[in-house]
Length: 322
Image (cartoon, rainbow, N blue to C red):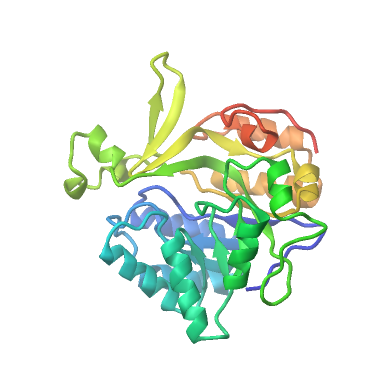
């Protein structure tokens, strides 16, 4: 798994679609991604195993198409594994050798370690944002197991992130290469996963007979406070922030913290414009202020936030010029 980042360029990763989109919508979306400035595309169902619009063979076929279009492709595992059938799906995922794997939870990490034990030439894997890696020691331990890239947990500040994997003294993979740090730069923030399906409960349905009502909510369900303020996003078994993370003006701060990759999490409207704006600001020198105004004019699923990276409440937006 090669990393295209240099000291002057941020690599752009399109994260997995967290929502229940119909197969036709997924295929249209990735056809657009194939022609975009994205360097890496992460594919797979990470929220709910009951969503069966795409199976592993379908994701792999799509991955080959994106790979032919010049994209690095990574397959992601589910973030919360709760049954033997889901564990079998994780094993099927890690046993394929066409694409690198992003571990969504420790069951995937364990399976990947076992694969590497049996095949010494196995690809390095990616540590997904849902893993609890909050110290240099933890990241070093995972690197020794075969990890080659780290997607930081979304609630880490830049100061904390720099302590885990500093730019001037990065954690090293087994190969000796520095482990790149990727940050959640755009999209509703994943806050928690549960065995309970909040979407089914909202519609007074049982999880096992949910009628796939999440297909009706392209960006999840908005939960407001008793005062009527946007509070959380409900997406099946996942709880998200109501606000949309947008680290559009932090290029210098991110680089100083050792970040070299930006993760952009898909939403149903305006995402290709978002991707273009991030590429323009981070890699072409465009104005962050103009890009921020453009993002605010789009029909995004929530207001823009960035508080966590600045050691503030996550729902705040701190104006920070690069």
